[in-house]
Length: 274
Image (cartoon, rainbow, N blue to C red):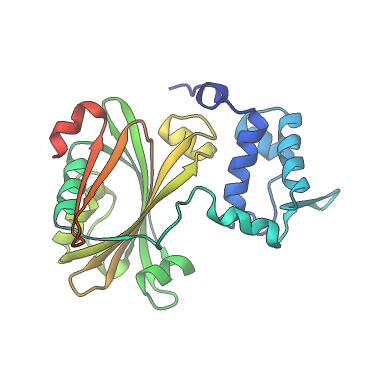
């Protein structure tokens, strides 16, 4: 399916959309060894060189990067980059904690009512941040899986999950294409206990725009979820990027702290997720 033109989704100049995406990636540490060259950025965003140069110039003017002829473009580690740290994030506590009784049912139901395309399944040594989240020893192996979930209307989400190899060794690409991962965890003997979750915003880069059929620079919901078992050990780390026009998440909080969470995928399916 052909992507819509960038200007149809956001009333922002193309160079500013590229500037926002690059700033977000800069804050995430993707450019620690240097930014891509102008030609690579032109190809990534499908724009002219003048557009790329204007986005990079704005970043340079704000002290985020330094452009050196013959040496490329590198990020500057100074106070200017600190302001990017809260880009797309909501203020408040580090995240919400929830018991998974109702939420688990909703997540599994959503998985059963959407189709899934498994993009990749890898077995690798846990990156440092993932290992810290899952409380793994250095060099421990994890399963990393990337999937896109869709409804009849089209793609809804891009999900990346990391599961300790000791748990994930019993399921792979075939099983992930057939069942929600929370079901697979339970079949592997995991008794799900609770979750820590953070919901914020993120801008679609070229890769996510392709997977979710949106324009580069479109706003996405970013969900980070850490699942614990009944012994309070982390068993899954998840990063999900969702189209806000096809995904809705609502919560009801009582005065005593209980949480009733509901998820909708597409408005016409809302009745199915109560």
